[in-house]
Length: 107
Image (cartoon, rainbow, N blue to C red; front, top):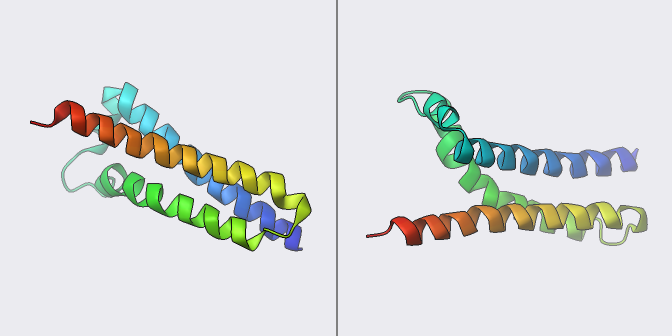
């Protein structure tokens, strides 16, 4: 039973990172996606604006908690390392892009 809980934890983090990267890439390279989600008063405005920012902070934090939680489990070590790498890569991608965009479009 505990191995199922560990697998659910790993896959939850990986799905969150994958959804955010997919959202980021679609928003970046497909203008219709941005227009479709940016209607005023739409419930999807939260998804476009706040979800990537919140998750770019929470996903690495969750990966650190998962690393601490599974630190003594030898079979889960590779999965935990993959989760940490995915979450740090997502955080660096998002905040790196925000930094570049801020430098490029600042007045």
